[in-house]
Image (cartoon, rainbow, N blue to C red; front, side, top):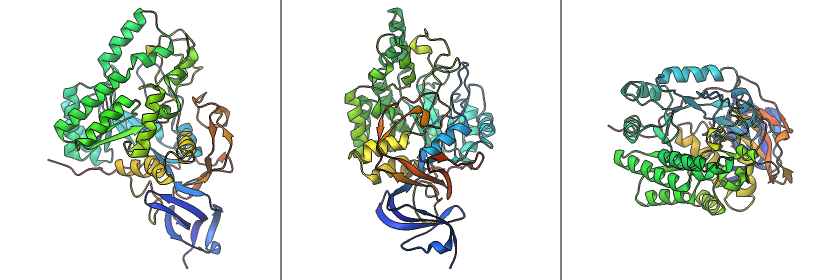
Length: 472
């Protein structure tokens, strides 16, 4: 009989295809057996799941770690602290962004992010590209080389002055994606609407963080969502609409799907658990803690987002972790506590809390099934970004990335208990029913008994396969 490095016994295993009880045998970092009654004498280590739910390790396909900036701001988490935080919350694979500055080659951008990650990550990782300079050389020469090397997804911005592409440039990138079988991710907000509203709000002296929600209106998100869908239709190529926040945008996605367009979509915890009211009352600067783009909306949009998770509108559920410390002159206070909302760095922490929030309120709250949870948080992102079946499932041959859940908790979420380098969580005081008891990355514990036990540098870079057939 062959031996195992590890057996996880008495597991209530959840996959997209169903739920079943079995033991999990792990050898050389991969799942080698799924069976009843594996002999514990054949394993170097045994973890008794004791009938608890076991899901694939989370794949967080939208997070920002150690991302360079051109405005003097600095995010809280690098690859060391960010992947530590992810592991403690049940995520075993992250896909952050290698950001290209205008005038920079994609090769230079990718090399920079490999330097940032080297020896730091405790869990596995891949990279998306951010394309801010869609010159002919980038689109026709560099992108094909990047896709061939395993960077098969790229993000396009329709807003932010230093990042946005024109519609013509977006069409060029979408056309390249079609030819290469790659995936374009689109941040859909109307930049002119934001600028127009911001100018008028500031002229009226409305500068507090709460006005960020008015400047980034749902109308602007709706228009940009429709425009992104139209550009996708014109080129006949799939796209992913990232961090969808509003009922108005959800309705555009429903319409597009009804027309038969191949549109994927993503949402995030902030659009389920926060509203525009969390950006503050009056001139309170503490609302800066919840500034992100798009911003949290109203209760009606929250309901639409929950419904979209349940009915299949959303393909994946990501954190969009992009933390800036609140008490930091390079963070939220980059321009001081009197800064107007448009000068406050955008982004909030969420890597560690993503899974437990959705497990607690989604699965245990009766809004989605456990199988749908696995699809949204692990299997679908692994498929969409070319990492399946190595990641995102519990199956023989897959990496032994596993989460054993404690699902009978009465836990109050507190920043002091988290492992990010961020100095706050926007979900302070939320009540949780669930948190990982164990997180295993390729069969090795990285979170156990309430403590981080990962190793910096143990995470591996993962080249991604192109998710779609290349088309001429």
